[in-house]
Image 1 (tube, rainbow, N blue to C red):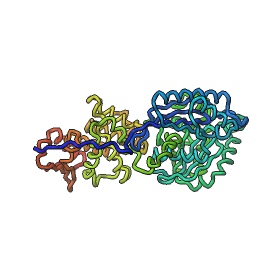
Image 2 (image 1 turned 90 degrees about the horizontal axis):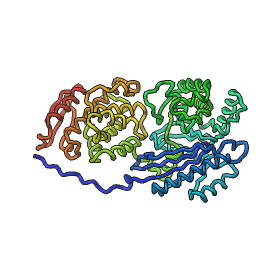
Image 3 (image 1 turned 120 degrees about the vertical axis):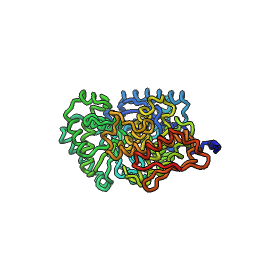
Image 4 (image 1 turned 135 degrees about the vertical axis):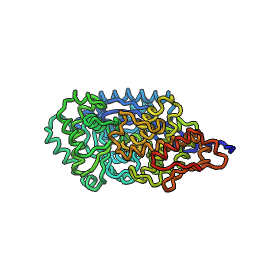
Length: 506
């Protein structure tokens, strides 16, 4: 009988160390604290609190910060400072944008904040604000090709993106607090927007096919579009719309009252007032830039503030794999099992139909293998449902909504076998038949590897899975025969059957 030596976990590397980083964003509309936990390359928001202070309300006319907004912002910042003290968070970044940047009493506000809270505010230029917001988009999406637009209360920053690089940003006075004074007709307001956008003609005309929308007002618009379409996955990050879908939702927004819009899930009463303007602005941008798609990003300035301190978070690795590893690290007792399983199943999928693209299919298999143990600590009767749901809504980036549905369906089959997916599964609308079949095959492969090895990487190393012609072959090292119990054998046959191959054990 073969004997196995357990693998000894190595010392935690610097890149894999966990640490907490706080970012406070003092914007024209809101003041927000986000506490991130950095695990390897993955940024996980573990605390998020926002106060709609309205610091920039009326600033265009007066040149001063709104007095009531200033007091509301200070109250929020005093609370945030005490919360971070209590949580023991030492690494803090406080940034301010257009309102504090442009108002003449901005320096007085900064001094008062430092005196009353100890927080030191960094005032970002418009260009730097756009750059950091674009870095956040790259951190949450990975490869990007197009133009990132961050709509704040007072300004709009536009930054070209190519691959994993952000180009020079420009800032435009197109925020709703700047443009809306209640005196313009819809036509006059649209003409004013077009006049300002003409300053960005080179950026709009020379960008790639995708517009990446960032900011609370555009997030509210995305929630409206989801509601109109009865969209099956209520998750904002990487939600995508065509220009036609944007036009439909925009037309609806301008015909509704604020009360009606605020009843839409995900649209607050304060965002509802700005939603028609945000919709019109997005529509004008898509038309002038001739974009094929708009993708909404939940990542933006705050994530970019963290990434600006360590660009490896953008340039190295894959955000989806990093997120899967961070999620799995809380669930699996053996961190080596997921990466080992990922390599182990690969030969079986050589020659399988392409589902998304050759490159993306390989990434998705690697991600699913890393997530194969997330249900291990859950009740056996509910593992399929809980593991699938947790995967579907996990706060990692780098996955389209169709890819998320694929991951979730794979995890369902990993625990439920060939049992059909539940009616509530969003894969019914987000995946085609081939992708659904591919998710089942992958789930059955993970199921086999887990049963054969007892979710142990050293045991899995004793076997090899391969395909030869019309056969799916399972080979074991000498002395491993006793490990191939009936359950493992039946799961091997189930996988072979799903692939249309004949099973052979050597």
